[in-house]
Image (cartoon, rainbow, N blue to C red):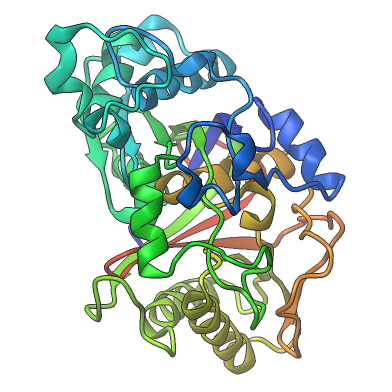
Length: 397
């Protein structure tokens, strides 16, 4: 079932990532074919055992600092304030907005005294270690009195936050919604766990669908989005979720959970317009098992349901994998490109092109194409959001 009973609009976005401190800088980097990944040895805050690979981090660390909240919470507040400024919401409109926050690891570093040069107050030590402090900090600082929700569904967290926010606005439960998603995974203890599990990249190949990929490149990011029932912005037209019920870490080799979501989405849009034009922004984490399974699922549905090649746009080779923040980050990047009637390019030279799939390395016109944004979370969570280029709708539709 489509979780969006009617289309809603993503009206404003703000983000920070390894590509830059704002969306304009990120768009410029993508258009230039520049990745934000750098040797982790240059980060300077990791143990030698996990600093041999590459990753992405924020150049400007000042938004992480503070005394009351954890680093991830401080960063979430900053991007939330930036997105609200772009949206132009008054204090009254902001007060009534629902908040949906997504993060896989939240303020994980606070549990290990990794505090990004913060000077914390002892009285806030219990709240600093809560994932939900991210949403609470945004609510308190921005003066939001409507409900806030914290989603921690692994690497699907950010996209799930967008989908549930859009759902509440589409249903009329919320007059508008603010989504925040943040991740700071460059912590030695966490990277050691990923390393032991075989999830971190070991050979430097930044190509999620390559047979030679060995894992993902960890990265920091923060995103905020505003979602409204009408107005100018990116049209959100569909949302679907499911679970693999397969394994805590791995995913089915045939990607059947991803394929099932794509089938539901295809049925929905095909029923309304047999000539609809899909394009796909996949999860593409970088692990070999995920790459093979997701690629297989995408190829199979395009082969059976589509008569021509579809463009596929992989964004993690540019941004790195910011775990739970990546789904929302991709939404923000797509929103930025849609404003110019374009789709983001791929990093040149990626594997995965075939009879069903194109991987354009230049920014093509978005036109009437519907972008299907996929995310997957450890434990088998799959999410899909359908997005279209900038449009204007009224509450009457």
